Image (cartoon, rainbow, N blue to C red; front, top):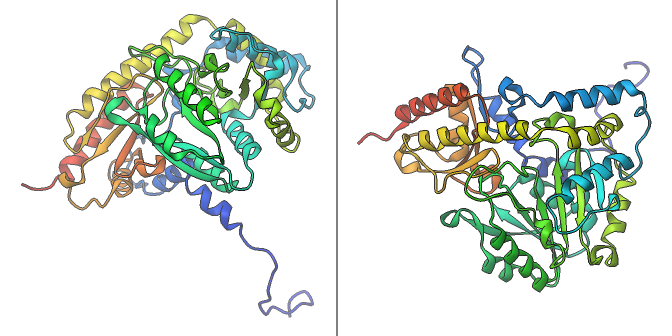
Length: 422
């Protein structure tokens, strides 16, 4: 007996949520956490973090002082210690509407803007709002696994269309049309691309919009890497085609301002024809917002100052650094025979490379490659299986150039150690 009760085992009525456990295995965070556990604690070298898109730890990628001052001013004002409204405070929504309208042929209203806890919550809200019995959603392969996780959790059927590496990762339009049916609610487009580092042309995006109209589906346009384009193609927002088919844009300040920890994003309805409201999607979004959390009010309070006062030279500096890092990455990849890159990255912070297992010994697949790389070289790269493309790798090039050079030296040493003997 212990405290008057028997110590014998009894049956309890609670247990794990198996669905939640299984879908969480799909996230970048989950995979990278497992890889970090492989790192040898006896290795005194700095870890080379080429697995996720967060260069904020590097001094050269520090955000603009204007953003830091805006947050400080918002806190010290004592005007933003209150709860937020469900959709976000009006000054912040107005500022986001004005900021995004600069690139559109029409003006957004604050009523088109819903502020979220980063872009991740925007994905969560939207997929829950669209979920209904028998609904399916079209996702890109490779893609961002957060869509897979929430699609699985909401029990929507997920159908996958290919991005074509030989065509700079363009959408396989014919495949999308063959996948869609009367239960298809939406398709996801990520531009600039995560994980591929591609940037879509205006002509290609117009084809996507026309196809969506033909199929009767909305386009979920993830532009969290908006304006981080440094190749021959400029960034084009999908919202310019909102009059062809309804577009819901997901974005945030996380990447352009290099502040992913501030957790301020938005969900935006680009729908001048009012189709989303007519079909109840706005009501569903509001319903989910009413039972979820809001971004910190003081961050919302800082948004007008951040969006209106950040200078172009800060943005140019970030894009130029990403271009230089992408150039280094692309050239160093050519020196390692077991990986090849189908196209030079033109945007975001990533590049996808194909892994040639036939040139390696004792490597089973991309996950095994990344686990052994972490253990032997204290270097993190994301296995392609995490983004839907087995035996590929996603390499992040957004970091200090010295880390990138060191990383490729370690990757070369790893290849030489595991190269198949001739």
